[in-house]
Image 1 (cartoon, rainbow, N blue to C red):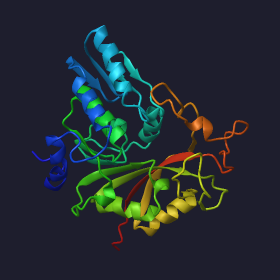
Image 2 (image 1 turned 60 degrees about the vertical axis):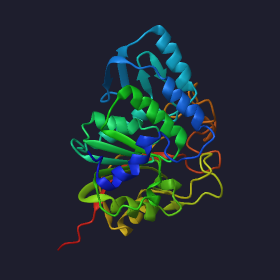
Image 3 (image 1 turned 90 degrees about the vertical axis):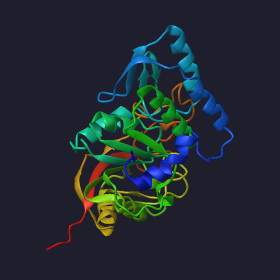
Image 4 (image 1 turned 90 degrees about the horizontal axis):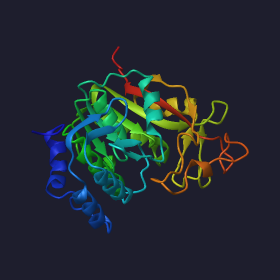
Length: 314
């Protein structure tokens, strides 16, 4: 049985034969060892609707052993996850972002979904929890890919797959997806318009694109191009306000169906933890004014926009 389509299945096949396919990374040996040593779980059940929670029968020794193994896969950016009594307290409390998405009330039941730049698959699992038929996650970062493999060892779903590739390198011309997610990616694109067009090229005619991105306040200029870093991130090429975002969306032959109110990122949502022990959002904004980044720009506001392909028929 093909996953999504024969073309996508052909790209997935090498990873069925070897976990990391033909990828090269000096850490692969460690990741493979972790994956092989994860304990099997009996009588397991997965709750993917209210979070990502796996419950099963295992021992206290399993708990300690699993926690030690999963800590070898740091940094855990997205989450949280609860595997029996092992709580993965990730950098991002991604459930808060997901709650904001749920405000849109977009129906993805029985839909084929593409999640671009999906990290460790947290949102992909939540999409299954909303009734998605199949979810394909694209994530080129092999650390995140290894985390997904570990998580799905416990979830055990055949309706979600991850391909460790970049969308722009995939040569498939047939639109296969009812819904496409791109969360936290647009401001990392040298050409955000090209990114939007690429997403649209994989979308079925009546499908939806879900964008989650950073915007600046409405009284700020339409586009902010950082001199170097933005909120301590080195690879932010541009940030638009809502007017600028709408303009670039319309220029690509897309239109906005609905959106959420911009919400300011906070240290309650993104922070350093034992599972992500490196610098986080606390170093991105000024201590005396969290509405200003350390570089002097407006602090990140995050919002969702749902797009569709423009209907130019009279």
